[in-house]
Amino acid sequence: MSTFKFENIFGQVKLGYVIAQSQKFDDWVCFMQKCLGLHLAEQTEQQLSFRIDDYQKRFIVQRGDAEDVTHIGFQVENQQVLDQILGRFDFRGIQYIQGSVEDAGTRGVKSFWSLKGPKEIQVELFINEVQVDQPLNMLASGFYTADSGMGHVAITSRKPEKMIRFWQEFFDARLTDTIEQKINGVTLDVTFLRLNERHHSIAVAETRGVHLDPIRTAIQHMNLQVLDLEDVTMAYQRCKDHGFPVAWEVGQHTNDREVSFYVASPSGFEIELGWAPIKIDEASWQPVKHTSISVWGHHPKAPTKAHKLMHDLDQLTRGLSSLRQDEYSPID
Image (cartoon, rainbow, N blue to C red; front, side):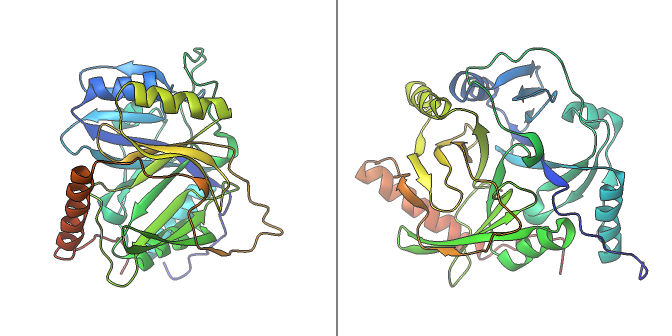
């Protein structure tokens, strides 16, 4: 493989779908359909799927005990881009497989390729999605996808250098900017990586000094982008009305300027529902470091003193226990 020719694929990869595993199907239906406003496209004993556009499936919940995101699917522009990424895996000796026809059907794609990615998240690649012409039945006015993909994911890591290298080496991710922020006495450094015009498709968070991972789930949050500011405020109120815990109140980020709020999903990881993040102008953009996450808002919802104590102790315990466990990375 020494003759493999590397070609730049930036701008030709975007987030396509996310799969979570859960036993809490009723809660997920209420959360995604009645609170965040997505279209419930499929409901069986083994799988739920939700739509936000003309793709058959965008967010999928499969029956299982993980209560976590297990698979993240990325759409590539064409066969040449797919061959380029798979060639890079071959060059580095990273194993991957082609998914079965049956599994492709559960994802709403024609075919896909899969590998064990950072933190043992299955990273999947596909070219062609299955589209449907059934009208959307959503409480939200609409979601932005287009050339930017369906949103972003944020991941906490004990091996942030390897995590960042993975996305840069195999997907030509570019550094957009960084943020440093002190939360609960710990300094958090976040690196924002873009795969296309979206400000970021991947965010990698690390604790400064000793790298801890206080988050139980593989991702900290995933983002969905709505078309109207009112979609944010109405969904925020519906989440509160239905009893889903809002983690961060409505606010605006310093770097991508997105107005959003964060709410805990039935499986524990958070969903950020946001509006109007900036698009990157490649001709003029220069990475900078921000010293706060938000321009305004995004205040953590005030817990009781007892709840805050238990929450902080729980995160500290998880963080310390993470030191005894290796974090998987497909690269050395």
